[in-house]
Length: 235
Image (cartoon, rainbow, N blue to C red; front, side, top):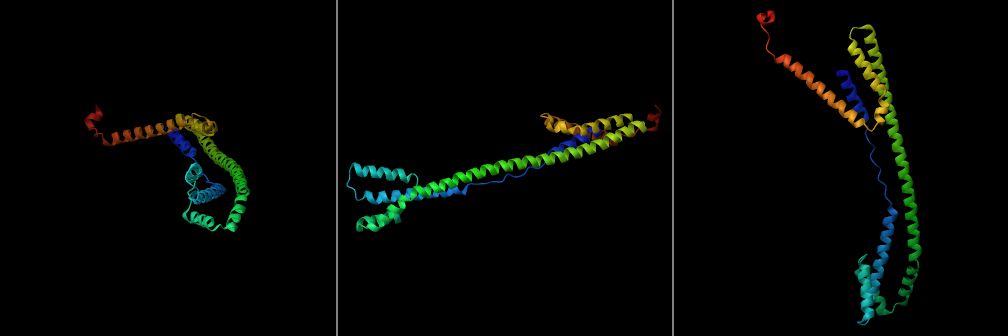
């Protein structure tokens, strides 16, 4: 039983291979796209805020103010840009208006270009995640193969020792136990793959702990029990 307990504890330790930490990858192009959209919304809200003050009170102005509120939910207008657009309106700066129109006409092309980069990056990240998953599975397989090879070698040595003990000594029970333990180690491949392995490993730990407690208890009792007198020994 002692040999079986030691072997089961060893198998439990072999099964707990360290896991590789996941590699975190992000799509920075999405952040660029979101920032660009927020800038466009803030610019539009700033224009409408500047224009609203020049529109008479009534339905048109209320509609403009409603759009300002809607856009501000995404990105608020800035004081600097509102003042700049108010200056353009006050001074009737046609050059500034033309420049703003040219920039506005490029918005769709700019955002579409950035979004294509976002989609391309997403595709690359998904492919990278698949490669990482396959690499991790291969790493785990290599570790498992090494563990099983080691357990098989240890099992073979234990089984051989058990056969020799059984053949050339009088300790037949010890030989049979060692042969069983060696066979268990050699056949550990199916144990590791079995859904029952946690129960097998847990039982092994429990048996090992119980075996240790029994041995410790017996040795403690023998050490602490009172010595028998010569008269008691003759009786």
